[in-house]
Image (cartoon, rainbow, N blue to C red; front, side):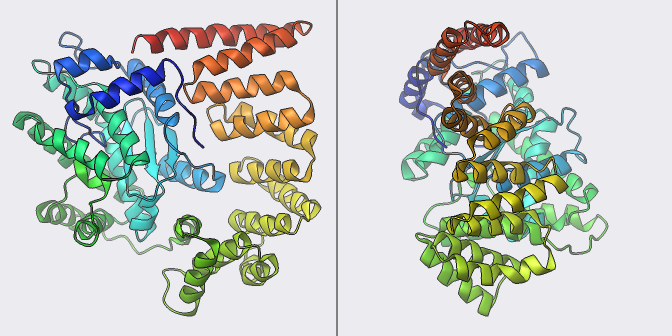
Length: 498
């Protein structure tokens, strides 16, 4: 899902790109501090988390800035609309957060559709994961070790502390973090890498020392979180080794490594720390491998190539046989071979008929066959059993939508939008559904919410004005839309300060 910048984000982004060479582009919290020259800072005018007299930034201010940052990020980056994958990442982070020292465990999770290995955390509880992280992490514990590391940066408030440490030098802003992460998630090439590495080289030595302290602390807290969550603390060292290998076998290192430099010493320290903890029995990480299979299908150039790859894995060596079979069924469905896909998927369904991933895959086969009635019945039964399952709810709404049952899809999505008000994918599909169901006011309201979440305030206001005009005879709706207009105008005014 990608949205184009509008005023004032567009002007802000243009200034940011022009000044990119002067910003230390930290990819993650606690990385090389985000340093802007005085000239660049004057042009960029992004929000500062603090100044030389404010001390540590309040959590409320961090949350406000995190929301603003996320809107701007979404407007330039292609994010995943895979509800099952989104649900998995959210649940993984939620589970880890329960065992972390993070005080505010309400997180905004964004999954970036990009096959590079990266993850990041932003002040205010924003955590992002590139789909490419799944391609590098060989098991769930390794994947979780990266998430635990990011949660550690948030829990220790490294960004706010870096401001305090630098009160007598150039004050960093969110500009560098935004610029680096957008470059990593869009360009993904040498231009973005050059901008980031060039600015890192100019960082002051005392700032780097502070950053290394942050990294060491995040390593320690992250490994402790893994162990408390019942995950293998050795996975952190294993993941670091995976990253180090990537620098040898790939033309350029993963974005993650640009501000999380991995050395033999860091790997040894992680292993030594893990060795002091109780041994954790190896777990079955099949759920992770199922999600990994979904990403690997899309990572192939064509569905046909994905079919060949998973066929070879199913016949030979694989990380998880169920995941290889699942991936093959998804690839065959995408290749337009529903009958073959069903034959492949059926053994999984026979063993676990209530598994959401398998139910959704079976429904996709029905829809490729244009058997929408079977798809909706199957998904409705599943939602009845798991009424809070985001992936199943979105699957059911989508099946009704494709079947032309727009009123049914509309009822589902209106209810779901009240639960997931900050999910752009829900509002996007709801707007489409409202239009085909004949609710024009609803179209404008849903599109406005979608654009608000993506920081495109002028378009949000445009839709709200249309909605207010059309709802003049509906007092309640008219009042709600007018209030929402006032909210957006305030957001827009804050954005103009950037």
